Length: 371
Image 1 (tube, rainbow, N blue to C red):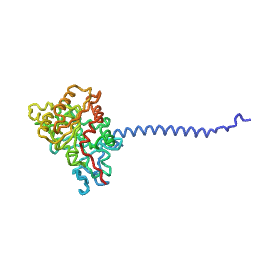
Image 2: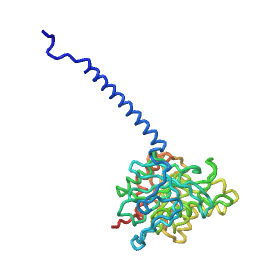
Image 3: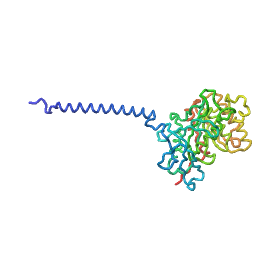
Image 4: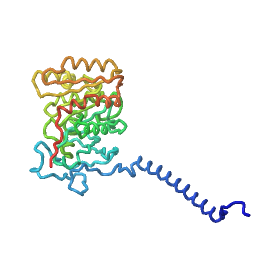
């Protein structure tokens, strides 16, 4: 009598089972290796498109834009009246990185026709820029400046800081305009701490004031749908970049309307001003603000922010400027104090979501949806 009512498993059946198990183990190992390889390739840009040509949607459909070629323009009759269509020539834009929503930060090298300075510029456009209802509309521009020397790069391009993704989120929530964000280098020369130029045309030095106020905006107008009036133009920056943005808006209120100045310097203090005191004072935000008040110039909107744990020099400088010039005549100010915040970009992105971005957006023009 058999010891069990179950049939005995054949050796052949056991062999098939072991072979199937080995196959699944091999497949799992290959899958893991493939995922690792994919991550490495994406990080290095092989799969992500890093370095590939980029178009932001102003070309003829289905075409590939070539460097130096003028972008496709809509029929002027169909354009929104406040819109300036891209004039060309098109820049050679290359993908730098890609956000989770599929939007791209692109990079180019710009030869400044007016300043004579050549430097890197990074640019990002929000998802709305390519949406059909905005294809005939201009978009507001935010020029984002870094602190420190900012000669070889601009730290606002780092997706870890989440500047672009935060603007995308805030714009969906109605707390920010869907800005085109432009991130130029701030200084020429080296990244030595003392080699900075206050975003100004210092005699005998590269014309960084002209670079920021003329060449960079000209680049944007050449490649993007923008707004014709100053209501579509603003700056933001931190530390020395905050100073440069503040100074530029006060210096050219007919071109730019607003700024977010985060932990900014208040007076020009580049070591390259030595021997050029008159020119230094002509680039002093204090002098420029008083001049704007005296001449009853165009309204400007200056959003300041600092962390409460920052150095007293920064805090006192901002507070003193607001007390002296704020909300007098055309100079309108807004202050955000970031609890526990330090003098760094992470603090300032957090602070921008606490009011400054919404405040300047209320005074700027956004895109107009059209059929």
